[in-house]
Image 1 (cartoon, helix red, strand yellow):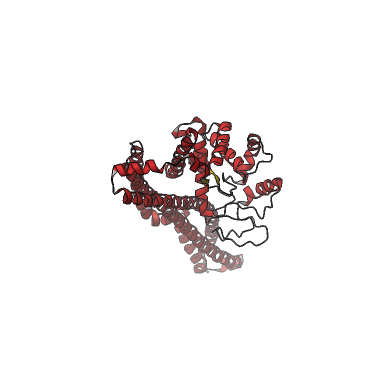
Image 2 (tube, helix red, strand yellow):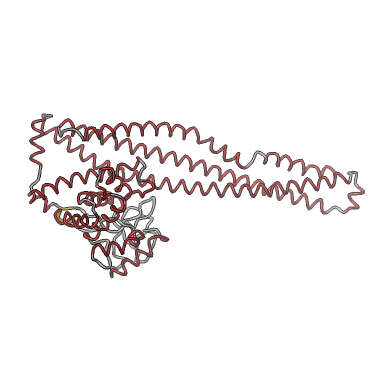
Length: 453
């Protein structure tokens, strides 16, 4: 009996010693497996970000120079290089986050395996304890074992049970914490993937400018005089500008003169200059191309703007806990059929549901609804009405600080419009602010022609 009693404690005491390495050691081992790759990614990311900053400085210098063929060609080339670097930086960030997710998953898998082993050990321990309990005091006294050894074995079993209980608690705590960290990383990766997709759209615009550059070089043969003649001839007269169509997200295009009228109204209400309002609406309209058009009845799993209309209510297009109820209230108040009104589609990485030219999500529109209604004179305000959308966009830009009128304040307001106040200062989001300011400069030129005619 002595051998029967002692083998169990020896085995489990050895196991308890192994446990003393600690649940945290599992996390450390899994972390070390990905740390080298993460370090490489970090180093490459730092190098790319330094090159992006270099390109930004060069661009600012070039944009202050007198308009020449050499200057404009250089700007296009530097913008293209900067866009490529930004996309590469985003890819590295996504890869780094993915490595972290892999590390967390490895920890969770190791903890699950450890939990299974310890449960098996606990089962064996219980069986051994039951064997001891089967012995009567008489059998113990008649055996060759000392009574003190017998009770020592019982104490050992109790200690091991306590150690296993503690192990279970620590595993569950570590596992819960690790799973939470993993979910946060997945959310971060989704955000990065969204930004990368938008950056790809920005890159397409630059590619178009690259094609324009090649066309200009072909026409001018690289001669400055020919280029100056070309750009002076490209300036449209007021009549052409008035009929040029201005693209709107979620609504039909309108003549530029009408868009300018809406922007001017919004500017008088908020103090945000009309060209900037036009720039924000145009940026939102162009970037909205990547998510297509969806109905709330579209299957969200399609994620490509071509979901199948199931004819039933399906709240996966927009975030259920945040936007579905406000959306239903908005369209009900406007007398719009919720199942036929288009909103932005959910891409593969998150939710859609943004409404109209200004691309307000329902919950944000709900917060601003009274102010928008009062300013627009429309009650209830309609996010799909172009004039109301311009006013809504200007109000949000005013709240973001755009009414101060400086380049820095306008760009920051645009970044806040896109990424929120918390992320607006992140240099990786600059592409959005720069895009808005570039469009604002373009529209200011058109406005100057209109107002001087």
